[in-house]
Length: 601
Image (cartoon, rainbow, N blue to C red):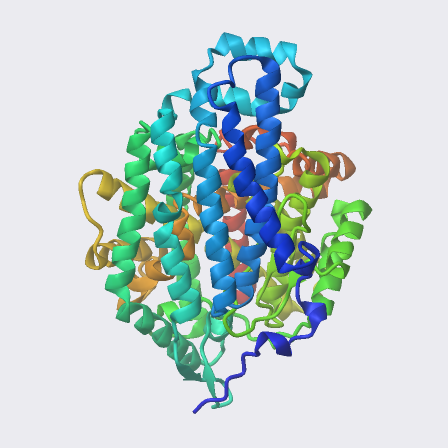
């Protein structure tokens, strides 16, 4: 039997665990916040039917709503992060379930607010804004409520939907538990011939192995596992999509995509323009994939050959502390203030660094309005992990600046803007590494890595976006998603994106089944738009210096105080035009041309 090399949580040094104990001194303190939020929401019913009586009452209600939601957010975030430490922990599962139930309860108790506000005549809202200074804080959300007035249901209907909130999100919960707590990929043979456990955390490491048999072994074990569960996962995802479609229809949206984009007032043309522009440049991707096949010297390129670096250099093992130091050098153009706070975050243990048994896979930035902006990682000492560090800390620094500047009501971010902050950091680091690299082979290696960042973010996430639009449109037209239909459509998409140089590969048809972001519908396209916007912002920072940095920091501090497209204009980017995506596409084209010339020169 293979030795299990993934540590238990208690075997990891506390220095490399996030300090979420600062959020609550004891379980009783957590329970008190949760119960106070629930009881506060019940008492909030005293505002029922009165929000339009006066400006003062509306201001009182919105202020109290924020107080309750801030307390609930902190309790939920803590429970979620504790569960993410080890999804097998029954006590934390119960804690998280209580937090989810509280979310549903509070949402139901306060569900009258939106329909009641939208029932207030617009001229009355305008008068209230003039009369009551406290409402100035809420001006944006009040005007936004008027904008979305037609999509708010009756008070009774909103209450029913709120009570069903926990159930309606059930498909995502089921997939999370299946994917993180229950799924097992078995053992594979690594480069040294040892049997090791394949996990979410080390999968990409083995897919980047120079030894093709290792890549194939990891790939086969991964997708054979998903194939064995494919009908269950398909049924679960079908429920997820049907939930989106039904909810959108109930709210009188033209489609589930329109519903998803409406919250941020994102024009659907932004989504379509992204897909169209990326498809226009797919021949450049095909050229790169053909070059990959040539450089690897393969008769037939397989999907398990897509991630291995094309340049044969010995990639250094990077300690977490070294990754932090290099990151600080790469982010130097953002200025001393930004760098000092980044270092403070490391010292204050914002980050949960290493993988342990049962820990949620991947990486994210989280936290509540009044906590540190925490980061979950599964750091495995690679160059990719260093980029994950700057990516997630980009999110957390965004949260830091926002929470320092904005009130609770605007203390978050849309994903549309959040992915910009993370990708600016990645792009700055990449440009720094390339410009300071003296070894010609390592420089080609980094160029290849930069190309792969474009391919895996801008192109791959757009492919995911196309798939999501397909699945939702199919259900909206009366279809029911089956494993066979989704695997067929996904395989067709993958062939179109990768082009003729990629050989036949039946297992990639199951890839959609392992993408957790699909349970947060119409989310992934924002990685691609964010990548495009970030490239434009980075270019401006590197060419204009301090004025561009100041604009960027103002953008980071703006939170959710305006619509995402308008907030990005603060940093000098207009996503309603084709400019940012087209510019990013041209950058990708130049990188491929440069890399090709260096490899053949």
